[in-house]
Length: 169
Image (cartoon, rainbow, N blue to C red; front, top):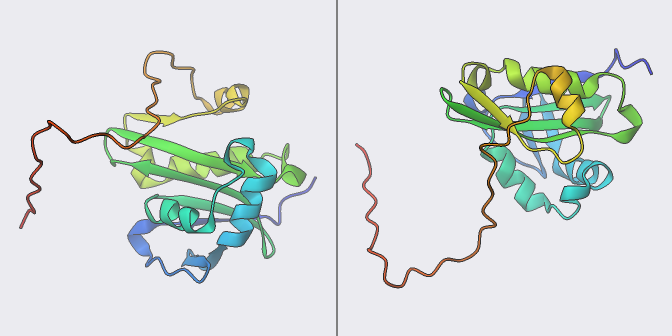
């Protein structure tokens, strides 16, 4: 499949104001959250029930966000979070099934990795269930020593000291 016409957009938190009209105006293109929700539904078995409101929050707290477009059709998406120096994590790498196998996923990940908030960190993490070989071809390595997860649940504060938050001036 010839995908030379596919356009990649980097949506950078440092140069955007996150205005959402059920999409976010960034990088010269809107992220249509309904299209993004549909992309999750057809691509990500692990994220079938993501809500538009929650996607908006995730995007607002991610940098960079990278999208891939075939005309006005959103066909690819990835995002990252980073402290800018030590660690970054890549999240939600999606390519529509009709476009898989054409190198677009690799370009999506490489575009995230080139972003200044990601390319300066010591380690970049990601989680994957079935795509280990794909990420190994990009340079990722399996890491058995640091993978842990907390399925967040309300925690009782009973018996714990109170927490005081100080604002820096």
